Image 1 (cartoon, rainbow, N blue to C red):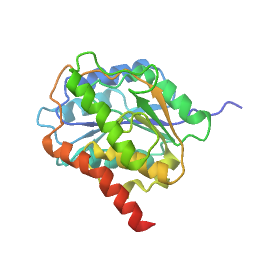
Image 2 (cartoon, helix red, strand yellow):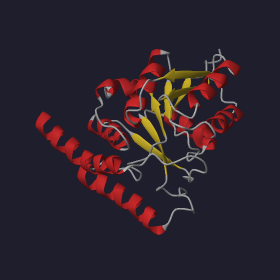
Image 3 (spheres, one colour):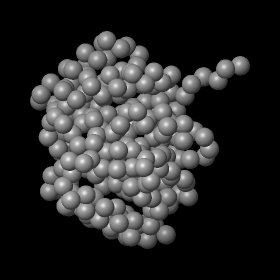
Length: 246
């Protein structure tokens, strides 16, 4: 008897990504992965990304879906909404992926294979394990800031992973349920750190596979000063909050 392929839902939050989204959808389709679905979570993009997503869904019924939200209230909120919908729709594996083409779609099959090979809870697409790298276009100070951010987070929280702030992840559905996804409170890029922390504090396993992180070609970065401040404070909030619960 041939086992059915797991349902893999790639959740992609978008805000003004009308040029990048069709490219990403094409890259995912080219993988020819059985059971692969794309769920676009659009935060009412003024550039018409939502309409582009609807067109993709109309052209690929059953494999591309769209979740329209009425306001832009942060990456974390968009991911929680999209990942919750994916779980409701019966996903076995939920993948977090950026719309800006910085995450290599070609690595997705390896991430899912690694996830399902044993009892791994989540697989990170990592810039900082052997074979991983960041974009050559990044200036030295940006590379230094990224490396320092990972050192900072790991020093405070002891996550034991090389790329603690990674945003390209493949999750088992049961892991997301075990960490109580709807109760996640962080937003922005600190969302990634909180999810990892919840995995580690529950004694679950994180694995990393190498990726080359590319710089976005089109569109504008969503990294604001407010997001950076929140990201700096998040590890302390998580650690102090965990102590109070202990």
